[in-house]
Length: 318
Ligand code: HEC
Image (cartoon, rainbow, N blue to C red; front, side):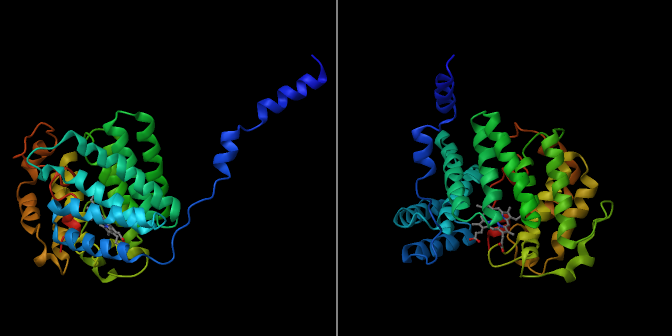
C-alpha cells in the first residue's frame, strides 16, 4: 500500500465525525444567578404542599414548576425541584386507589431533570444523589441492568461528595431489594456509616444509643443534614424509622427496636405526624420481620417506609 493511502486511512480513522465536533462545540447551559419570579412562585407552592404532605396537589405544583422551568431552563434549583416533584409522585404512589402504569414515566422525568440540575450545578451533591436514585429506579423499571449500574456508581460518587446526605439517599434506595441481596446488605451498612460520619466516631452497633450525641445538633454546614431543619422538619425521626425498618427486614428486630427508639430523642418528636407508626414498629418489631419480607402483602399489609405512603413526607411533613 502506498504511503499516501496509509495516511488517508489514518486520517479517516481518527478524524472525529462532523456530528461529534458539532455537538462538542455547541454552547453549554449555565446556571442562572438570579431566579425568575415565576420560579420563586413555583417554589413557594412546592414547599407549601410538600410540608403539608398534600400529595394530591402534586399536579398543580408540577404545572407551575414546569412552566417556570420552560421560561428559565437554566435554573438548577427549578430543574431539581421538578425532579423531586416527579420522584415524590412515584415514591408515594401507594396512596393512590389505582396506580396507573404511566406513573413509571415519573422515573424517566426525574432522571431528565436531575441530570439537568447536575449539569447546571455539579457542586450540589444532593442533586447527584437523587440523579443516581432516579437512574436506578428507571433502570429497574425497564429491566435495564446497564442503567441500574450507571445509577449505582453515581450513588457511590455522591456518597464521597456528601456522605452525611448520600449514605442515606443511596442506602434508602436499596431497602426495597430482597434482604439477603448484596445491595440490601450494603444499603444497611450505609445507614450505619451515615451515623458514623454524622458523629465523627464509630457508633456502637450493639448499643446504638444516640443520646450522647444529641449535643452535636447543628443547623449549619454539611452536618446540618443529620438533624431537623426547615427543609426536613423531621429528618432525624424519619432516618431512624427507615433504619429500624431495614434492620427488621434483615431479621435483627432487637437492634431495630433500639434504633427506632432514637427517634424519641428529637425535641420535635411530639409534633411528628408519624409518631404512632414508630411506636407500633417498636411494639411489633418481631412480627414485622415476616411482613417486611413479604412482597405480596396487599394494600393493607404493613410495608417498609420506602414502600409506604410516607416515603418522603415522614421527614418532610411539618
Ligand atoms: C430521612 C429523611 C428524608 C427522606 C425520607 C427524604 N428526605 Fe428530602 N431531604 C432530607 C434532608 C436532610 C435534606 C437536606 C436539607 C438541607 O439541605 O439542609 C433533604 C432535602 C430535600 C429537598 C431540598 C431541596 C432544596 O431546595 O434545598 C427536597 C426537595 C427533598 N429533600 C425532597 C424529597 C423527596 C421528594 C423525598 C422522597 C422521594 C425525600 N426528600 C425523602 C431528608 C429526607
